[in-house]
Amino acid sequence: MKKSIKLILKRILSGFNFILIIKISGKRFKIPILGNLGTQNVFTSEKWMIDLLKIIIQIDSNKFIDIGVNTGQTLLKIRSIDNQIKYIGFEPNSSCIHYVKRLIKVNSLKNVTLLPIGVSFKTGLGILNFYHENDGDSSASMIRDLRNNKVVHKDYISLFNISDLKDDIELSGMSILKIDVEGAELEVIQSFRKEIEISKPFIIMEILPIYDKTKNGDRYERQVQIHAELDDLNYSILRIVKTEKKLIRIEEIKNIGIHSDLNNCDYLCVHKTKLNMFKTISKY
Image (cartoon, rainbow, N blue to C red; front, side, top):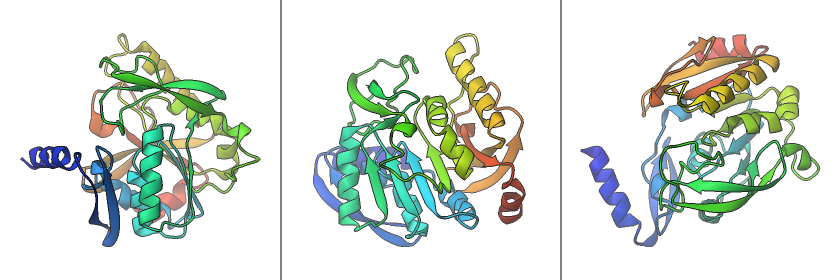
C-alpha cells in the first residue's frame, strides 16, 4: 500500500516545479522538484547507508568520493550527518548534473565538487544506456547489454581515467569511495587503483547479482576480476545485511558467489589494515 501511495505521489509531483522540505537524520533539506527530477529524494531510500556512514566517519572523515551521484541521494545522506567531509561526485548524466547543482544551491551546501563525467579505465567517449523514460533513470548503465530490458534511449557521455584528472582534482586522502555504477564497478576500481593503494579508503559498492552463470557469463567474469583486484589491493569484502530502513549487520565473506537476491548486492570493502578497527567500532 505504501509503495502504491509513493508511486502515485511521484507521478503527481513530476508534473510541477517547486520545492519541498524534508528531514534526514533530523536535518532539514530543501528538495527541488524539476519535472520528473527530484521525486527520488522526497522519500529517503536506503536509510541503512546512514547507519553505515556514521560508523565509518568515526574512523576517517576527510574526503568522500561518490561515483554515480544520480540525483544526490547519497550527498543528502552524508550531509545529514557530517557538514565538514569533502564531497567529490562523478555523474555522466547531464540531467542529473543540472538537478544536483540546483540541490546544492538551494541548500547552500559547502565543500562539494561535482564532475559531469563518468569514470572508466580509458579516457574517451562512451554511451549511457537508459532503460526508463525518467531523465534521472538510476538504472542507466555504461555497460552494453547489462539488462534484458529494452534500451529506451542512449546518450553520449565523457569518460575519464582518474590518472588523467590528478593534476586538476585532488583525490588523495580518500576516506570513502562509493561506487554505484550499474555494472561498471570493475572499470572504476581499475581507474582508481593507484589512489586506492595510497589512501586505502572504505569502499561501499553495489554489485548486481549474476543470477545464472551460463546466461550471464560476462557479468560473472567481471565479478571474478573485481575479486582479484580487491585481493591484490589487500581488501576484505563484507556483505551489508540490512532492511530498507536500517543496518542489521555486516558480515565478512570469502566470495560473493552466484545468487539472485537484490537485497544482498551491497558490499563494504575494507583494507585489512583497518579491518580490526572497523570491527571494534561497528561491533559487527
